[in-house]
Length: 428
Image (cartoon, rainbow, N blue to C red; front, side):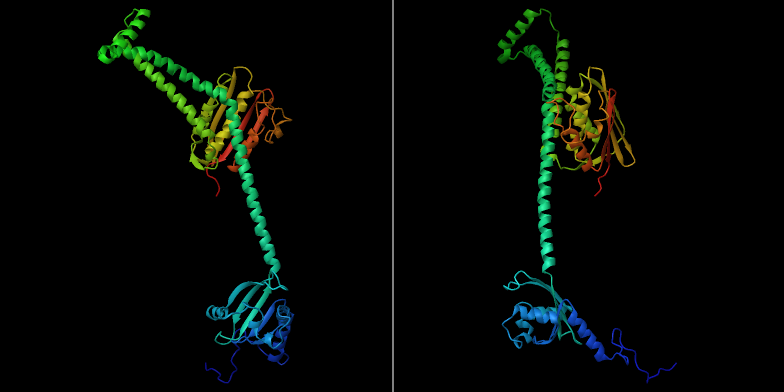
């Protein structure tokens, strides 16, 4: 098929297509009309800055900035305002196809005005003329600054709230430890007492063994110690008995020292404020045992503890905070039991991606009318001096922070069961 050379080529994409009713001049007139009515200031100028066209907003802008300049002076865009258009911005527009920036005015009549500027090079080679677009964004900038200021205020308020929350958590923790101080001291004193007693017995055993060694430097003292002990008990202890007694005394003493070290270690980890926000992947049952060790003196004279631990994965949590929850629930369970035949149950299991921990008791229970209020701050049913009213409120907050839940079921006169649900992994 041959081409028709006489045919008129189609206009390029985006070009005007003049008709009998709308010629190029008519369409250009409509474009100018649109530009005159635009809300933004538009100015076209050549490479020397001489204005080729400016719409009404641009002319008003130029005269408002320069009320004392003549129209001849304002025919050059460089005279409108220093920094509005520069050789650098023109060169940047030529290089990259356009330039954009902001200008804050400092003139008395335009104090604080903020302008958004765009510079577009036109023409076949994108070298000249230039189209300058000026948009007043003072209100938008003011709103943005106000938003930044309010965000900064919110960040400060959040930091204060977080600090207050941490202080409340630590204060409640210290209050709990303070209430348990006598019991903890008793738990430490018992092993220390029999370690002391064992060391007294080891004094004679060591003297008898050293007497056999016939060490000259110790001989006089050893004779005196052995003589005193034999005066009280004429029976010869026998070397086999000495060896057995020595072994038993040392093992009992080591067991007592280990018990003290464990209590002190658990207490130190529990009360350490620096670990409040330390997330870690841990075995939650270790935390349960550690907390149970701290509160044991509060429980052992009132109840038997029945444990049923399942196989649990390591979970992502803040260990010291979960231990705080365990302590609050265990102490509450012990304090709800009257007499010496109580039962406290602790069970754990993993269901899907959740670890479920239940702590129950057969104590006094919680009246139905009171049950909805137990997580409210400062609400307590205990007598003065036995609670701050923050324990369960803080426990509820800790569980929320861990994206978990705490549920309670109770029957007055029969007992209470708390159900803790924790995700294995925290959502990020």
